Image (cartoon, rainbow, N blue to C red; front, side, top):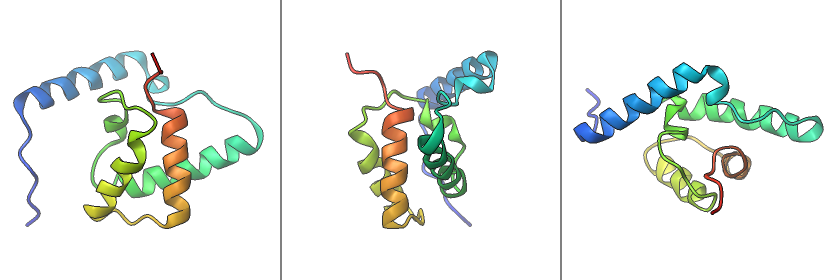
Amino acid sequence: MNRVAPVSRLAVVAAAGLAVAAIAQGPAALAPAAPSGEMADGNARAEAVLTSTCTACHDLGVLVSRPRAAEEWPEILRRMIGNGANLSENDFKLLSDYLARAYSAPVK
């Protein structure tokens, strides 16, 4: 049996609120702006890695559940690898760059 770490009630309520807000805004709320050309190809590959690797354990709502600085994504990916995510060095770089570009909080 797999054990899941306990989650605080506040975290559950916050995640549920964000999910409701994202659903109300439609699918575009979770998707980054669509680029063109080579970047679109790189984004498509990164999105495929993201979907195949990350959704093995959780939904992609975690990307928007809390604003993250671009510098945080490599450490988050390392933590996920430590938790069992299967990510090659090339995919690590691809995904880290993509998350920094597409899912980072704006710099204030």
